[in-house]
Amino acid sequence: MAKAVKTIGVLTSGGDAPGMNAAIRAVVRTAIHEGLKVKGIMRGYAGLLQEEIVDMGSTSVSDIIHRGGTILYTARCMEFMTPEGQAQGAEICRKHGIDGIVVIGGDGSFRGAGKLAALGINTIGVPGTIDLDVACSDYTIGFDTSVNTAMVAIDKVRDTSTSHERCSIIEVMGRKAGYIALWCGFANGAEDVLLPERYDGDEQALINRIIDNRKRGKKHNIIINAEGIGHSASMARRIEAATGIETRATILGHMQRGGTPTCKDRVYASIMGAKAALLLAAGKSNRVIAYRRGEYMDLDIQEALSMKKDIPEDQYEIEKMLVR
Ligand code: ADP
Ligand code: F6P
Image: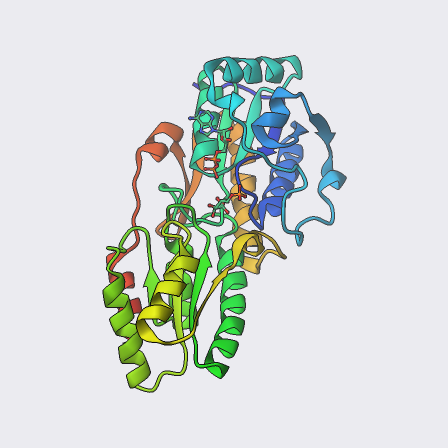
């Protein structure tokens, strides 16, 4: 049932992602265009519970589209996982006249958004995470910038790896998902990619491939290891001991979360942010913006959260084929 809203809030939650600022800008400017007032909620659900709420106008989002991070800051908030915290959050919204919220974040943040919707605050989720692990959407804000940052960094490691004829294990982020790892595997022409969704723990097979690669004359051996598998340093020590080839581990870490958003992230974030504000203006609630099979759409939050997605098997097979 549609409910008219006059004032909306916008918050970013979970890990930050390049392009979140473009999404905030789009939410604010679209809402104003639709005659709504906008409030920025700082530090995700934590800031909501602390009532860190500021008025936003069109100029509050000037000069941010090109900036990484999020001007609203972000946080993870355990208190909001409890029914008491959620009830308090809804009450604070009502106190500040906020009758709709755009939540920019991942699946965890959408769970919180669903709770607010059930408590009568119209909520719309926008997928923002470098991990690409939002099941309902083929695209998440930040992924493109993140994989480009990782790709450039891995190219640099590859140079020195080749000069020293070493093996390099490079650990990329992604929480439990291997999308960043798979894309870097392709883009960097890695000799091996270890994905949490696929890795069977057979280190001997990995070692055999490294030995074989060296016999075939490869000067470097790049292994992309996903954070969800981890243990890159100890893996490097075992590989060096077993192969006799000097092996180094590099953990790329939070550099993958920062930096100037790519064109793709800015454009997708702008469209998704605008669509979220338009849904609120139309009185909609409990929806998530998604990009699926080349189209933007919105889905029921609970339906979105019940979806599953996996690494496309054909892509994984192609990646392996290209380096053998
Ligand atoms: P992401 O949104 O990137 O998946 P998290 O899983 O860390 O990141 O979730 C971000 C925040 O969303 C959490 O810190 C919490 O405040 C909120 N959240 C997560 N799960 C729930 C839940 N089941 N109920 C209410 N809020 C939740
Ligand atoms: O969800 C984004 C992400 O960068 C994951 O890839 C990683 O597992 C996690 O956040 C790291 O979180 P933190 O910023 O708390 O170290």
